[in-house]
Every structure is written in structure tokens, then in C-alpha cells.
Image 1 (tube, rainbow, N blue to C red):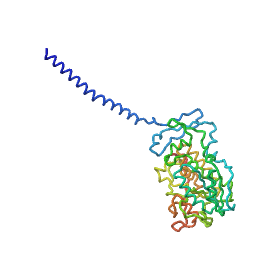
Image 2: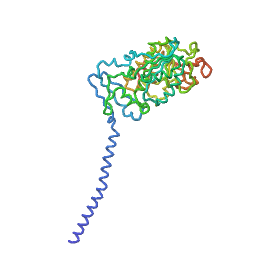
Image 3: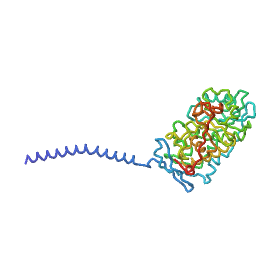
Length: 410
């Protein structure tokens, strides 16, 4: 009997020991299992982090699937963006409608008011951009020394600075003060809002969110400036202070050295050269070999560089060409906005406009120019007769688009 009691106690002790060991093993296993299940569910969740756009009864259309190039935006690629219209008459907020507006601010006139074959046009606003403002202050001094008649669009508090940079009494200059909000682009699709990550975004706030280079650009105001180039040239054409037939747009940061300082950028030889475009064609620079993308709606310049060749920093043409191009650019911009893609990259919109309306554009390939491959059009205008091989320039024109191309998207 005593022996049986001892054995019972030993068995009980063994059971308690086994239970403790089992507890030690099983509990962590359960925690690990729960953690793994939760992790796999999170990984497998396709739409868990997608922004939810709530349509209302006034929704007119669904935009195409948003496609982006960055790692951060990959989770958005399957979303169907359904905008909420704040007003029923959304046509008045399209680029095609807004681009018909004119700027009516008074101009500051400096130097002699001459009649000139050509006018240079530029713009500068203090907005967060790729480079600090101190860099632009340095570069613009080079451009401001050019002897060509010049129209400058700038914000009111920079008029004095621009006046000082063009203080040489021999330089013919027009300064047109305006704000970024005066640009029609600021009102583009202002009848739309988007909901993203728990907050309501305007079109431009949304554009900055989906910008593949968001960290570099920092602000959507720079998009407004880039996308307003042809509209600004048309404003200069409408007022035509120098009674010009030919207009050259150039970014104020295109002259980063002193090679052209105190010179007339457009050579007198340009007018009799073979490179002078006809009255309905703009002259552009191709910074890489021209190779059109497979689709009309195309923005993937970071990963498909072989299809990206448009330099948007400078363009030149007769006033008819600028007016026609500006109208078509607005239509292209509307197409891209409707497709739900990133539109802040002006070079993609410019390139698409030329592909849709190839008669409006011709390009000088960078390989023919003894200058910077982005800013080389300045060299062509200044040395228009021979390329770097001492031969006449051979411009490239985009091909006629097919019907399938015009309805295609990436």
C-alpha cells in the first residue's frame, strides 16, 4: 500500500513536469502561428491600402487604372479612380476651356521699344523645384544679358530684381507681373476631389502624391509653371510688344555658363537657313534618339527611357505654330488627366502632343549639336547653318499616328 502511494506521487509529479514542458512549448508555438497567419493575411491583402474614391450621383466617368513607376505607388496600380464632381458643368475646368483665358495685368516696359523679327519669352516664379533659388539667381544673370528682345513673366515681388538684371538701357525688355494663381492651370479640374489615405485631395495635391519624383519636386506649383509654357508664349503673342513673327521660349535656367552672354541668341543667319521651320511647325530639341513610345498615354520615362526624347526647356516657331500647338497641348493635357495618370511631367505631355499632331513639331537630334543635349536648341538658333559634322542639320519629324495609337494607354 505504501509502495502504491509513493508510485502515485511520482506519477503526479511526472504529469506536472510534462504539463509545464508542454506549456512552455505550445504557448510560443501558438503565438508564432497567430503572428504568421496575420502576416500572410496582410501580404495577401491586395486592396487593403488602396485609396477609396466614393462616387456620387454626379459622377460622369471612371478614369482608367492608375499606373505609376515608383515602389511606393505599386499598391495603387489596380485602383479605379472615380472622382467626385463638385459641380455638374465640369467642361469649364478643362484645359481646352481654360487655355482660352488671357492675362490682363499691366506690363513694365524697359529699354527701347523696337520692332524685331523675334521675341524671347521666359518665366520665373519662386517655387520649390529641382534646384534651390540661389542657383536660378546665378543662372538667370547669363540669360538676362542676352541682347534679344525679351518678355519675362514673373511674380510681382521679383519685378525689381528682373529690372535690375535688364538695366542696360540698350536691352528691350517687357516684364509682366503675375501670380501662379493667375495661370489657368491652377484651376484645372478644380471641380474634382480625391480621397486618399484618409484625407481629401484636390487634383494637384493628388498629382503630387503620385509623382514618381515627389521628394525631388516638393511642390505642385512647379508643375503649373512647366505646363504653362505654351500658354505664356501665346500671351506674349497676343500683346506682341515687338511686333514679332517668331517666338522662342526658353527656361530661365538654360544658360548655366557664359558662352552666350551679351550676344544675340537668334543669329541673323537663322532666317535664311534650312533649319528655320515653316509657319505651322515648332522646333524642339531631342535629348535622346527619337523613338516614340508604343502608346499615346505614356508617362513611364523613368523605366522606359528608350521612349523618352522630348526636351521641353526651349522651343522656337512662328506665332501661328505656337497658337496651334497651345490648343493641341491643352487637349492632350485633358486626355492625360482623364486617363488618371501623372501629368506634372510636361515633357511627356509635350511629346504626346507632337505624336498626336506630328505636323506641328520637328526635332533636332542631340547627336547633331555641339552643346548640351537638353539645352542645345540655343546652339542651333545661334549657329543655324551647319551641325557639329559641318553639314546641314537634319531634323526629325514624328510619324503619322495610327488610329490604334491614339486610343492606346500604358
